Length: 200
Ligand SMILES: O=C(O)CCC(=O)C(=O)O
Ligand SMILES: [Fe+2]
Image 1 (cartoon, rainbow, N blue to C red):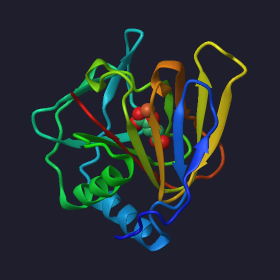
Image 2: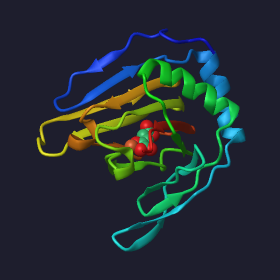
Image 3: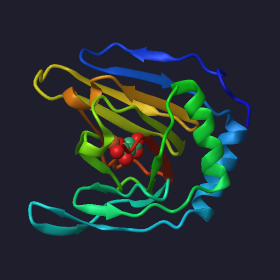
């Protein structure tokens, strides 16, 4: 893997946000091999979440890796991280050099098909601190990532996250915007997304 700076960054021009998209952060060959390894080697689990008092199976599979002493809680789930493996450490160090951030944790999502999704949310948990840097890398099927501003209803953005791409969200993005991966009726093969985070 030595694909740094292969693709030109695209700065999304959105108010109250700092979002940068790198379309081919990993080249096709690297992305293919990372995708296959992640599908096979990650201990994917399907958690239950509580939404308005009701228990649901999460509409995707997940896994958490990170520094041992940093559990991560969201949607009423407390996840204990698996220790870093070699592949995730390698991806982490490439992303750290481009984002100038030392990540403690990565949350992995496995969207099996178009019925899997990730509903509107901000990554604004207390333990991420103010103005968190979130580095999101995608492998496999392309899915649409939607953004909407919390108070200005005219501000919305959709972006297709490509195989091997990196999306960096920083600054005040999580305070003013929510994001989601909606379900799609289009026949869709699996997609894996990794969001690297700093847990304080
Ligand atoms: O799958 C994605 O691209 C987004 C994942 C996400 O927003 C999250 O895990 O917080
Ligand atoms: Fe998110």
